[in-house]
Length: 127
Image (tube, rainbow, N blue to C red; front, side):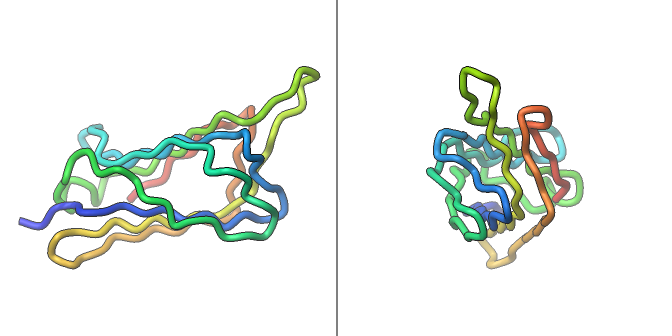
């Protein structure tokens, strides 16, 4: 029975960077709502027009591919940098997530044209 062995995510920043003070929480969730893999970090500055990663997510539950697809999700939540006068970070980006399984199979998703702001700090994608 094939199970999840690794999860990696890469970000392609567009015309608005992610400041080094802004942090990301990344979660892969199976179709029953169980957390399967995650990471949380600021990852430093993602400058305009750069590729950052791949970053490893910690596999918490070596789920089967059938538990993730269809019906599983990737959730990005972020805490943007903010200063005392109300200015906050905004980030324009794309991402690619690759899930690898013990039998050599892979699940990959790519999303582009994304934006995280203080008003929209969470994005969810289907696997």
